[in-house]
Amino acid sequence: MKKIRAHILFLFVAIGLTACTGSPKKQNSEQPQLITNPIIDGYFADPCVIKDGDTFYIYATIDPWGGDELAVFSTKDFLTFDRHHLNWPTKTACTSPSSNSSMVWAPSVRKAANGKYYMYVSVGSEIWAGVSDSPLGPWKNAKEDDSPLVAAADFPKVHNIDADCFIDDDGQAYLYWGSGFHWINGICMAAKLNPDMITFREEPIDVTPPDYFEAPYMIKRFGKYYLMYSSGKAIDATYKVGYAVGNLPLGPFETGVNSPILETSADSTTYGPGHHSVFREGNQDYMLYHRIFPQDSAYVLRQLCVDSLNFDVNLNILKVRPSGVANF
Image (tube, rainbow, N blue to C red; front, side, top):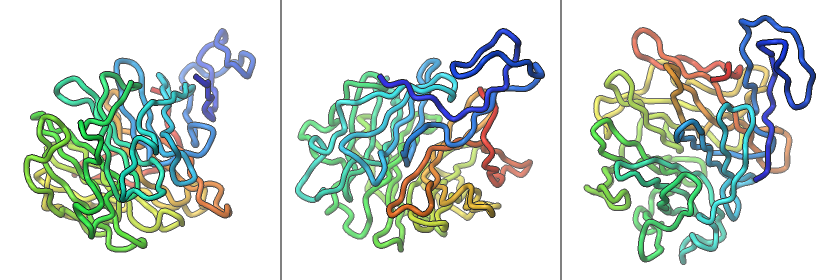
């Protein structure tokens, strides 16, 4: 494993603590360590994060535009990271007659009621599903015939990418996915999953909320369902995160107050942010997402960032302030 150190600002809580790259410094004991953005050196995008025990696992696309494998990191504090290489998915293992030359990208990982871990990953206009007994594998195609879960021909009007699995409080799992072609007409498909996590209980339906383009991510808070997503073009400053709210997992959904909640900042420090996931630590929600940097590259490169996600007294998601967070 390759040790990767995050970009961090060390504010030491006691005289005796030292960082690997610095000497002890006296600081106010009330000051926490800060996690600053980007959190990891290198170019990665479309992050998903889960927590298993005391360890977070981040799965992400390797830039530019995917690789033969995913980028996978583990961390206990979002300050230092170990990188891992999974046996699956790979471009070789996830190739069908319609996947063309597209590489592997946009993973979503969840632990199901049966105790196994399931991954949903994009290759071309296809969704592939993997299964493992642990976050780091070994993984394998969850389908015995090694075919994609959603093939391009299944929903030809949908760009079948960016799948996300949501598991409700009652244990029912749902799959959300979809985008548009040529940066327009994004479609969000959704359906209940059977307990095997790779077949649909019902025919998938179109649940597209207003202003949606891609990267759906569902969370449930306060008895409401918040369907979050990205809109705009993933290659420029128009890319941003919005959300819609519904009373049921499959909608209908109405545009959320304050949406979009994360977009390019006035000084462009945060540029084209999007394709996020959400995790909760203690009583605080956090958003893990990517931003474009550098902005004048001949091709798009993204960095991973984390910021707090908060709600107002009326249960609306507040605008996200890209400033990093105190450590957990």
